[in-house]
Length: 121
Image (tube, rainbow, N blue to C red):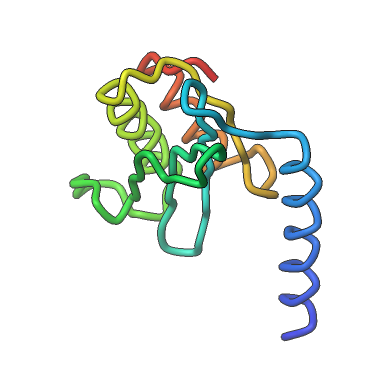
């Protein structure tokens, strides 16, 4: 069982490296990086020019009592929250980094929530 988990993790790291060769974030258009664990989803706005995290949000911080922290609904709320933080920093457009995950479920919900809140992906 541990071998399967290790193989999945290594495969995701390979996909992540392949995507990151093409995607970079600047101060004007930072990279919106999504991390997905079993319990939580995290999103960060990263500027690769100085390797600086400009803003971060997590489903751990959201005050949504009726939806769980690992659900698609909470990921959509996370997308709107990270869009609010971006607007406070006067950022209107970002580059989306799915971090090696499939663009499906919670990862897609973060992007959809950010788009609906006015952030250009």
